Image (tube, rainbow, N blue to C red; front, side, top):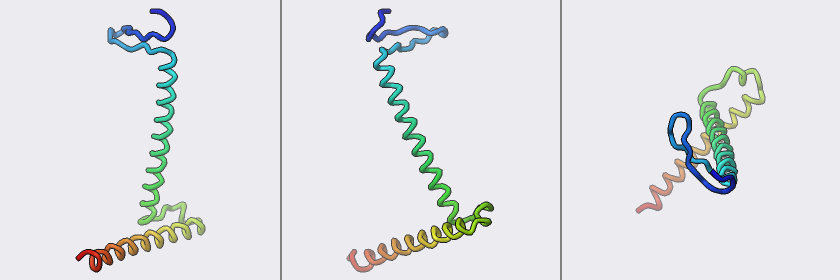
Length: 101
């Protein structure tokens, strides 16, 4: 096969066909894979943070019990989440009772 920008097909040792891409395409694919990996890692980090925040609403880890600052922060988290839910339910009740005929 001629070197350069041509794309061809080769067979590997198992006899399956594989695509041999041109170098610019390989660079684009590597950049796309790196970008997808960064997005995937960011999403996984966000989901882990959300899972912990939800878990801390209902349980206090052992390490947090020894740290007064952490206890104060998780207490505020619980108070603010409760206030948020009360506000949302109150707004829904107002809409249901007075806005919707």
